[in-house]
Length: 167
Image (tube, rainbow, N blue to C red; front, side, top):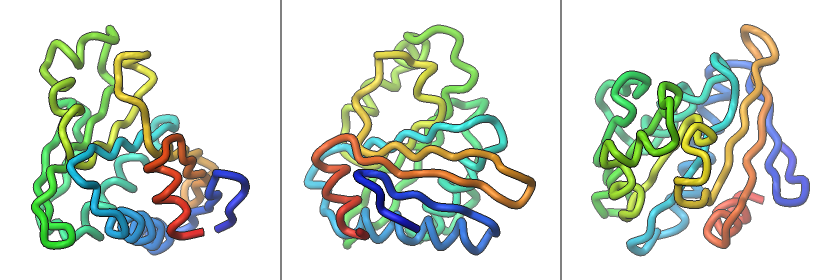
């Protein structure tokens, strides 16, 4: 992994590499108490680039023991995870099936995104400008069946603080 400006570049060539990246992201999250604010992490990449897999590994690295389902059809999967002795709400959104930018809002998700906790949002571009700003943007690119490349970009003061933790 390399830090270039405000981007952390990475290559994932195995399941272990993906889990190692997830553990680094969890260390970033655990380094910051979040203090009743929401952490918004956008995941951008084509179908099959590994967005849901990375979120699954992050949840497992956070200690979640249950099954991690893709939110493709439900739009949102909620979790409750103990982080630094605090119960934190985690929401994993997949907006791929959104046909209109306000559709997710009409489903009541805007209220969730304005709450404290961690919010992973796949396909944020589908909601156009109706989402809260991202703190971190994770970009993933499918290279081959076994290789993904990507970056983590900080786009807020909280994101910068988190990304600086591992740089």
